[in-house]
Length: 261
Ligand SMILES: CCCCC/C=C/C(=O)SCCNC(=O)CCNC(=O)[C@H](O)C(C)(C)COP(=O)(O)OP(=O)(O)OC[C@H]1O[C@@H](n2cnc3c(N)ncnc32)[C@H](O)[C@@H]1OP(=O)(O)O
Ligand SMILES: NC(=O)C1=CN([C@@H]2O[C@H](COP(=O)(O)OP(=O)(O)OC[C@H]3O[C@@H](n4cnc5c(N)ncnc54)[C@H](OP(=O)(O)O)[C@@H]3O)[C@@H](O)[C@H]2O)C=CC1
Image (tube, rainbow, N blue to C red; front, side, top):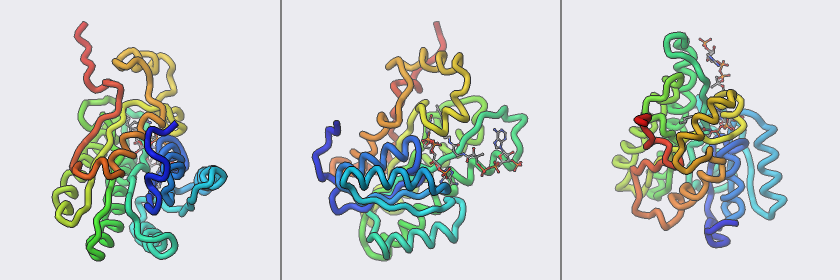
């Protein structure tokens, strides 16, 4: 049950990249439930369609667009279409992300760049396409970037992901300063390990690793996608009106643990 009031996001257009699965799906459903006009965008139509149908069955309003966040022309076209077909965007959640496990010494530059392109360049392109329109129209808005705790701590076998998320933290703070005067707030959420379709397939495949990770989380369990929802809602709402450039970890304390004893 949501702790936020019914209709909190009525009249608000919320765009979520990667909204067909995992954390993005949980966010889309939650925003839909609170009255937002939800727009989700990713590469595969199937998961996007399922989420839109689920929101509409619950009485909410949603639509999807297929896009690859690395494709500058497609990003610009889709954002233009959203403005015309749905209305001016109020909230952008840059959630689309990619990752895989690989020793740094064995990783191809193609693999490294792929994850940088999806996570960092994709967040930049989406923010730029939306932000330009906000600046031109003299209206504010809120951007929430999905970073990760590996931006701030060395996480072996994820050199591409960690570097991209550190870049996202910097992008967040730079845009917060550059666009703050125009009423645009830019914040980032840093989840620790979360069980999702994408991460279960690519990262958390070894139960021994899962158990070890879980043992190291002070709150004693992996996060579920729903654990990330509340802080995003808070940042998107009026309650977050004076937050910008903030990097907020949602990790059950995982980033604090050090192997001393
Ligand atoms: C504390 C916790 C921190 C956790 C932080 C973050 C967690 C997450 O992000 S979980 C999200 C997981 N979800 C996803 O990754 C979903 C989207 N992922 C994908 O689409 C793919 O996995 C992708 C990232 C590889 C991108 O797909 P695509 O654009 O189709 O890329 P290609 O398959 O063409 O590969 C490009 C390039 O990357 C190399 N590569 C791909 N997978 C691996 C692998 N498992 N190991 C090593 N290298 C891999 C591939 O060989 C290509 O390289 P080049 O041929 O050199 O170009
Ligand atoms: N799971 C975890 O442990 C953690 C995840 N995160 C971050 O949370 C976010 C969501 O991840 P999570 O829910 O776990 O993973 P999922 O794989 O379930 O979701 C990622 C979504 O991103 C979309 N996506 C991937 N690449 C692109 C692209 N090039 N263009 C458009 N959309 C794309 C995918 O859809 P499609 O394939 O259809 O394009 C998918 O729906 C990511 O930014 C991730 O880095 C952060 C910390 C921990």
